[in-house]
Image (tube, rainbow, N blue to C red; front, top):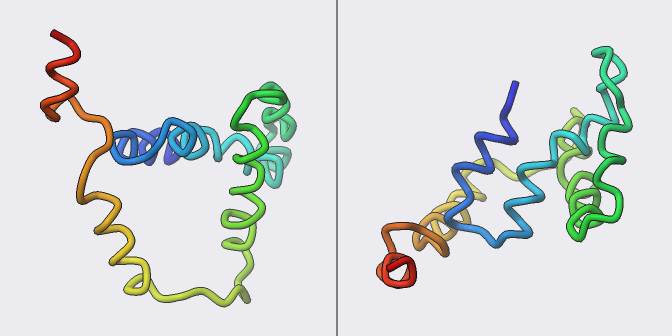
Length: 106
């Protein structure tokens, strides 16, 4: 029920602020396609209109989320993505455990 929140929390130390925002809000943007079937407002994403990452989030949805719902979509196996995931999680960009972050806080 809250996979965007969980995904955003996991990715936060490893991605830019823009990519974090996109992941955190992609569920609301994707909701345009199905919220009305759940009795929710499918236009919930409109409250973010004009936000600096709104267009990029919509682009992410159009390129990656929407095609993922197509059972005929040709996709690569998970093993194809494993090296990319390993590289992403190799070094955090932001963390309280990085020396420069701790030193800046002092």
